[in-house]
Every structure is written in structure tokens, then in C-alpha cells.
Length: 103
Image (tube, rainbow, N blue to C red; front, side):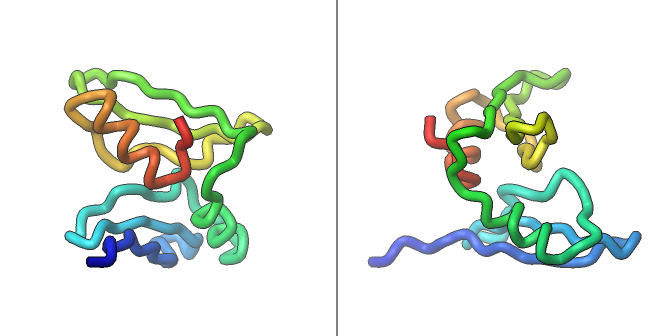
């Protein structure tokens, strides 16, 4: 059986900026843009960023005790972050892998 893939939706927010969100086959949001983009092409490029060796990945425990991840480009700009908290670091890393984290 073929493995089902996550889907990416590009949409405009209330301010008219472009954003993306990644949804699992079960309908759960597993990733989202950290910011809005004026240009749809810039949003699409960020959504399809995939693996990038220059990006820095940070895993941290939030104030509620859940694990999250944050992805920073070489220019210091945050280009991705966990849409939700996870019960363990391993769960946060598994979610980040869907976004391009290579370990």
C-alpha cells in the first residue's frame, strides 16, 4: 500500500497576506507558516523549502512542558515552527522531519 502524503494549502489570511499550512492525511495541521507573505511565490518557496543544510533547527520545551521546534534560515529569519506542542522531543523531531529536518 502506498504511503499517504501530507498536503500543503496556500491561502490568504485576513490581512491579505499569503500563508501555508501542511495537513496530514487524517486532517491534522502538522506545520504552518510563521509569517504572512506579500508575494504568493515567496510563500510557495517557503512551503516547499524541504531539506536545507544551512537551516538551523532548535528543539525546546515550552512553558506548558510540551516540546516544539523552530527552523531558522542562515539570515537569522525564522522560516518554520511547530504548529502545536508535542509530549516528547522524539515526537517533535518526527514532526520536524515532515518539514525537512534531517537529524
